[in-house]
Length: 120
Image (cartoon, rainbow, N blue to C red; front, side, top):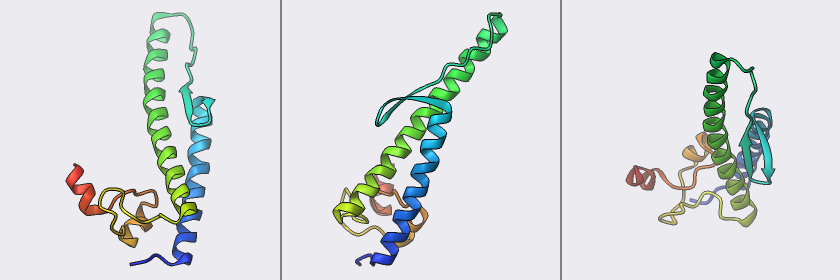
């Protein structure tokens, strides 16, 4: 089951849009260190104990969000690279085609549902 060029182009547009959204979120909540690495921002709310506690809680939340966004950005960039290389839509584990419905719902998918279930 080969994906047609129109389908791949539509997924590429979805992926590029998602990359822009991720970069916007990352730049709002983190500081870019390198091309693919960000550090969560530490917000200074004041010097009182309750403000310090709120700072730590907010930083932990930002750190978790930053890591999640970084992983998502990595996967989006990986999918875009696969489109360029002509390997988009091929399962990384079994080398079988990924169902187009899966790619439509999750354009950065790297494996088919069968392999995904096995890895859970």
